[in-house]
Image 1 (cartoon, rainbow, N blue to C red):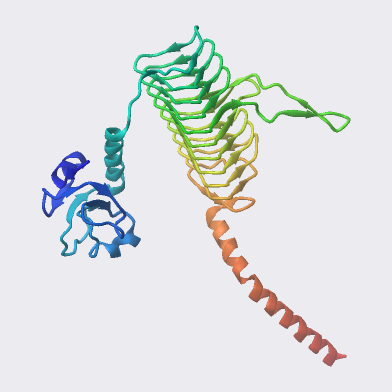
Image 2: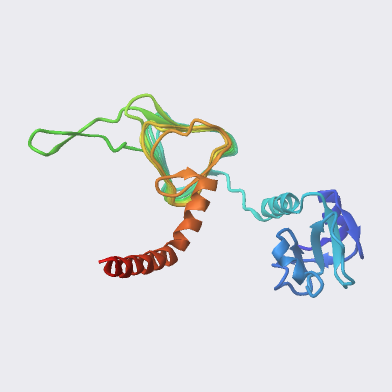
Length: 347
């Protein structure tokens, strides 16, 4: 696909500096771009490449001083947001939009598939399941009995959705993710064995949620495990039974959230963070990578890091102190030697 600077500027409502007829046909990083490439400048550490870039068109912040360059620049208030919108447009143009029910799939006689939806080969749509209009159920997807999938939702190959789970509108779930597997519930017995606690609840995923590949969200013991509207979950995340993830909260890869914990709205959870069960995380909390959260966070809009986690500023102080420990230990040993010398003299 070929776009001119004028077309891109009109789409993004930007200001052109240079030739509006300049055309691009590909996208590349600013330091690797060649003629015919579109690039963008958002992170200050890449400003040094602006003068030398060979990109034909560069999206830049509105208040930046531009060098003399053969490139055409498009000034924008929010470069990163504009670049995201542009990629969405390109993606929509490039996407294949399959429709209909492919041969080799199974759709139960009692199931309902909405208009303009797609069910790929080897997908299974179970008894009384419902798929809304415009949704895409790719090959190898399993939808169990009474599962509900909303409108314009995409389930990529290999997604498994267990019985009674509900998925809203405009949801994207990537390959290998399992929705509604049994929660980790076992009752210790006097002989040291474990009795399984039946998990009879479900998972409810609200609108505009995106879930990465190979993530697992366990069904509740009873009632529902809930992923609220706008939440974004990365790959390889474990969400345990009866957890609730708040509106527009984002969780990075390999994080684990234990049972019955409630994570508030607009929170950020870093990669490999671990959160114990039966606690609450306040709205707008920011949890650092590998943080270990062992108790409820009650104050909103604070950062937390470390294991066990403390407020982020305190964690930074502790890290700074840790760096001084070897020198402090050396000085302590020297003082001990000096004290021994003084003791011997006093004797």
